Image 1 (cartoon, rainbow, N blue to C red):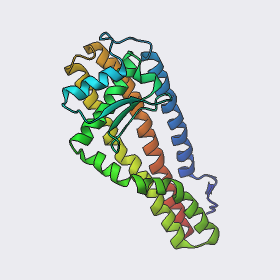
Image 2 (image 1 turned 45 degrees about the vertical axis):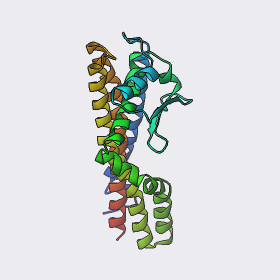
Image 3 (image 1 turned 90 degrees about the vertical axis):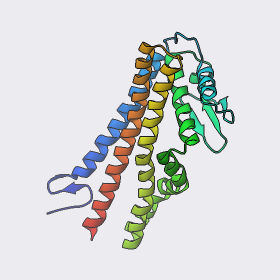
Length: 234
């Protein structure tokens, strides 16, 4: 049987094909969230609250007074920073009163509540951020260097370092899904969105969540392929 990293038997390496498929799925998921967001960004929420106002109301309802809601430039660059305790809402969210904007703002407040209650997956994700950053930047270069020099321990090290970035992607999944679930409950319970609007906001957050699923699956497949390549070299 013939193998060169690109071919397996008389066809393409199945894992390589799977990596390509996952990359395509990531692009589809990204396009999907953009499409869904644009659709519901045109629909004004019945309450008329902007993303910033909705976020502040959620924080107030939960008795959280040490977190600041602020504007950041960009489109869909929304995030919660636990280090500075700030809910950062982008141009498309902060001043918009659309269903999509309110949903995204509530999602970020979901992360605030996770932090406030020491939600375990978030705690784990926060702890591995430095290692994950190293893994995403240095893992593949270390592995390539090891292959170029034919140093197996270096190859193994590259795979292990890269796996830290993959772990981060996997741990992110429960964090994101939980934040969205918290957001849905709060939006309806606090009357920020009407029942039918909550259903629409769920579509926005579900589309966003699928990008994380696709990214995590792609990272896992890439890691498995690297492990298989290393085993075959042996």
